[in-house]
Length: 131
Image 1: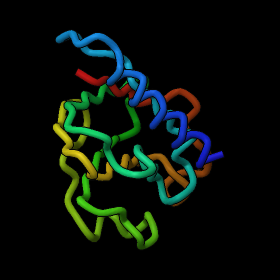
Image 2 (image 1 turned 30 degrees about the horizontal axis):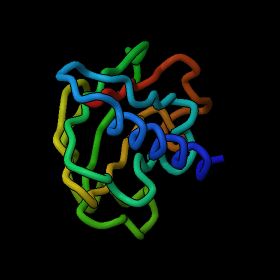
Image 3 (image 1 turned 90 degrees about the horizontal axis):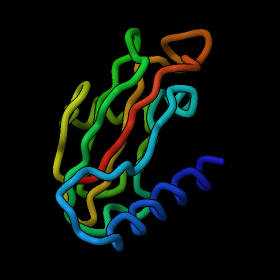
């Protein structure tokens, strides 16, 4: 399931880049807190790294009790996801925008996960836009 989700995210990004160029943000993906519940709360955004340089905007929704963090690495993180926070500081916590370069890997952390909660948050989500 996780591989299918990552593939769909990558496919959506490729399709978004192929669209006519405009300056407005385009909806790219939504990460639900329940999808991040396992793997220590982390999810990888691009399977093979970013295809090209782009700005990503993150907006939390229904996340009053959930914190979202974004980590960016120049190489795929090969250790267990639970070690990401020990390897780097997040480039973004909460809402905001970042620019990623080709080949960089993006990992999203949801604070409501198997180590911090007994059950996933069914409503919290992180909307991701390209623009």
